[in-house]
Length: 100
Image (cartoon, helix red, strand yellow):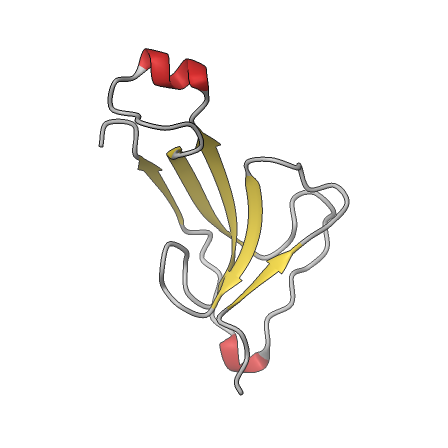
């Protein structure tokens, strides 16, 4: 079997909610073959009351994905295997799902 298509970075300083650091070999919602800082806002009951497009608690309202090389919380350089190495360009994208 081959390597998994993604890896998670977990450190003690990483917030419990809304933040994820993920390495992805596939181009799904992240940048391929790089570490990604994903910041998400999930809907609360208050959000549902304010926005008629949102239908249930916990759905993603928006997310920002930033290509990174180091963990912004613990400072460690995030490992990339030689076969996966690509040049990090600091790309970022923001998705707003609040009006879907």
